[in-house]
Length: 172
Image (cartoon, rainbow, N blue to C red; front, top):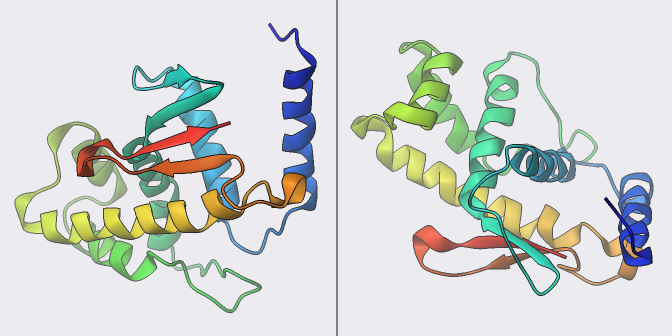
């Protein structure tokens, strides 16, 4: 239940972000959808401190893999930035998708990602894809989302570096 005026500002700000900010790429939508999905999943990795929500960036990377795989597997082209640019991680992701075509496609990828583990022969490409996704998420939508509200970079989302396996996202 929401009781404070501060929380009503949050909803107002979300509306401003959706209405006012550039929608030239799918990244902002994927970021927002990923955050919502992680919250709805009731992840045990979500923590709260000092009016911020924290969770591992790996959760968001996993969500993006599941969102973008079907689009990149499809023959239909999804343009970015008014049709001129490709996804920053598209080339690396295509390598994984190509390898999974002969292994059963998306459903096998999903199963490997969620429970079986990525096959050894794909680990290097998978790690490179994860790095590309980390850079894309942390340097693009996390940096720019919220500028319509307060004109600062990283005003809502922050990337907190830790150990390689402990990088976090925090949300104000």
